Length: 122
Image 1 (tube, one colour):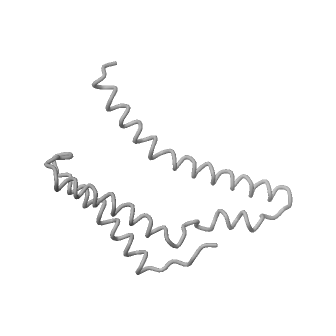
Image 2: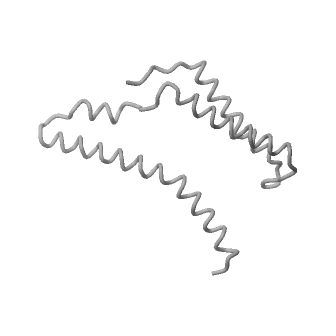
């Protein structure tokens, strides 16, 4: 196999692995909880309320939007500044436009944190 074909294949395969791995482990964690509930029901005839709460309760903390927004906004600002200082293009568009693609959703997450209050999780 030629190197010219191997390099893009490795790059795209690594992107798929980076994106797919968290989904796999989240699914595996959910499957373990479902199996624990099933075993509990088979042995005792009723489900443990703590197990059901673990599966139905969203574990997103009250500051999740703020953290996600700060990360996206900082990456977007960095790409925006790099794009303004260089003449590089990505897919025919200047790099600063990619910075805006990350910066604007980051700002929206920060606004969500302040304008849409979330109940604290236990």
